[in-house]
Length: 331
Length: 242
Image (cartoon, rainbow over all chains, first blue to last red; front, side):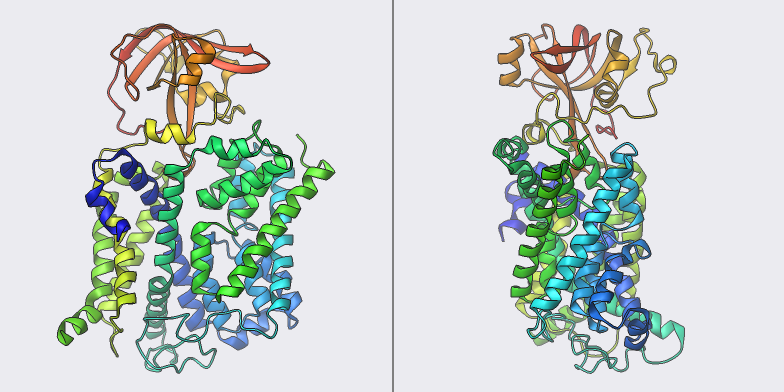
């Protein structure tokens, strides 16, 4: 209620104005990607059958995770767009390990992120290689561990939770997965293109409606953090031993930057923070931040989110420590 | 009540997408999106505009059972419309001293790695004959401008710790530099050395002229402008640098 009333109550306050600027900039930058992601998810739902998806991926779940973590190279998506896509892919029977690997790897291991990192670090290929390589490794590792931990326990949301309020029809689906409820008269089952495109857009709209509010709440929390927290305080934490990487991870979680832009911010910490800490910033942001934490609620059950969060934090922290202790990435 | 609920169920999403379409159209038509995103990123709201238009038509023509309209659905709808409530607050507003206080990490906090293309020295001459450069260029290419007489636009910021370290006749001149959007804006600031007239509170826009210097003080680089002259200027239409 405070969130909705603030524009009226606090209209004259500098804090609310700055919050509004930051909040809207995050929303305006991320929402189009989420809309695109929803459309891609809708197209997958209607045009990609479970059989076709299974045929495209290796049969073994571990091998599928290796492939999925690198899918961003052909299907480049940022972290906001990847969530609705992954929702639909899991509906099509994509193994959990592969889904997590794509969810984490897609927003890092892709050409756009590679190019922006290259640009931000003045064509230093070692930084790009370290970011993409570590991102891929973490995505595969966390994906495989999640697949193992949740082999016999449900990690994805149950029916009705994944698509609440779509409510447009019964629970019968395209024969794919109980999460993907839609009407049989939705047009997706025929051969004509236009009804199928309409059906894809209907699914896209449902997905957008089911996920976008998490993005907006996350953006609001991020804007609140950006408006209220002094960055120098986070940097002061870096004076403690082993703390620079943790401080930069905390900053990335609070800032909620797009994976295609975060390299420029990381690069602005050159001279202030060691390179492994900057790398930790670029690794954690696309995998785990405030808005993503909320958006994951549209895909995963609560305990799976807890496990996923812990694994990501541990993996990125370990990668940064490895670079720090081995002296890798020293300028 | 049932009729109202049915009506809300039928048209709530159409209204949502319609409102977003209207807002995005306004942002694009007036180039107001530049208040939030870098100018080249106009494609993003344009893509959003097309998507919400398509979704709106799809929802308008959707047949079958209407969605449930429970409290959760209503809250979700309210959250999705909430950003648009904040839009009027941002008219004519840009990041200022309040954001500077939170984002500034020190005089060496801005990435000072030289970046191409460098300023075309001759083409930047202003009427007074003093070349005008941006704060971002000064920070990135400090060596290039060291010892030169230049003019630079920005906002004034009085920082107690700066005055304590460099003396009372010092303050900062800053502007925000954006990579993608306002959320990632970082202040580019230089030290102004010289007595300012008293009518220069924080966030006043000025054009400062003087000799730019890159000095080493206590083992760290300090970029500063030895003030010779200042002129009050109005805030540029786009106050951000890129």
